[in-house]
Image (cartoon, rainbow, N blue to C red; front, side, top):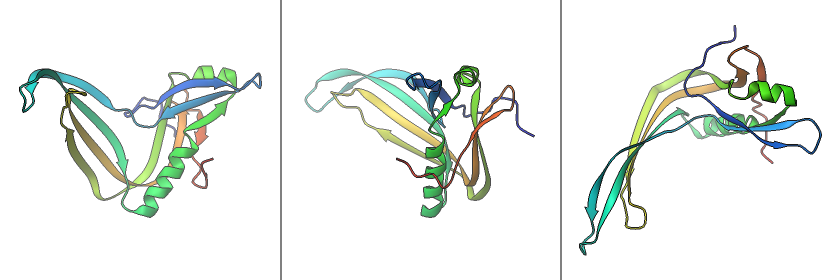
Length: 164
């Protein structure tokens, strides 16, 4: 049974081109959406006493983690095969704002993982950036692009896909 509700992370799909009268639209999207929040600001200074307003920014990411190089290559091929594909115009309009990506797989040890890293502000880029990434570690078996209202499957990822 196909899920009919939205789930997080939601795919960010949009029409990016119309193919010269052929009646097909190309959809382009990213599987995972980052959440970026400005969390405040402070007055920073360098060793020479130059002061500048620094924005504190938090980026939170949700990702699928893989356990080895072979799994990483398979994951890349699956993602690439659904990164841009064509739909008939009426179907493309229906898909807009109603599409999600379903990732099907088996959890593998360590099952979940997390990482945090930061970037120090500079005078040129006065942003104190912290990035938190949370990962569900999977052996990915399939990926589907589907309509969460109707359950219609628009595209199934192809692990034999070779990017052009």
